[in-house]
Image 1 (cartoon, rainbow, N blue to C red):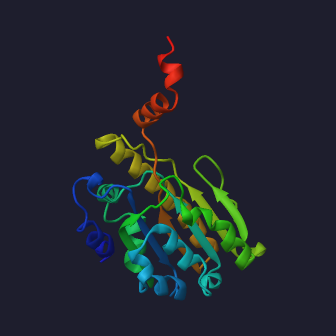
Image 2 (cartoon, one colour):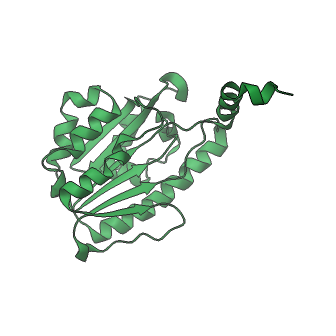
Amino acid sequence: MASRALTLLLALLPAAASAYPNTHPVLAWSSRSSKALSSVAASDAVKTGSHTIAEALYNHDAICEHDAVVIVEHSGLHASDLRSLSPSCHMAKALSGAPSTLQLVYVESGDRTANPFVDMAGVVSRRCRSRAVSHSPGFDLALDAEQGKHVVSISLLPLEDGEMGSSRKSAMASQESWLSSELAKIEKVFSNYLVTISSSFVRSRATHIILHLVLLPSLVWRA
């Protein structure tokens, strides 16, 4: 039962990550029934791009009912990366057991280098008068329930666009494991929380080289 939600999600995924370019998955769940999340999941916003979805969710009147809003960014994440996750991982269990969820496999990015979910963290913090916390691997997670509501922005290490095979699978598993431990810490402090996981485009090293050649032709060909 714990893996049903992610299993259904993965059943929709093609083998190739590039089947739908300029898209990324958006996953969200809450520990308690969420009017904000349920409203967005049932609305036409899910048929549009990431900006519309983020705005509909974080501008919803009920978003401040959550004691913690957790905004996770995993740059470079593709729908096919979810294939490599174990059905017993934290994400699968969370999606299976949560009273409110949002599971979108292919969401149009719009501005490929921006993540509207992350960009709106400050909006949510101000609206809900929440303590803003930024977190990433290598740092301690600073939570204090006595300071009231929290908006926790978590940045995972990016998945390289050109990385494939066992290397990418290993990187994905490592990031998911670390995220699971950090989410467990949040769950111990706040019983009413909402988590979103989204992505943004990451240029491969090859893309950086090509752009450099195109944008700086005078320097390249001067010799």
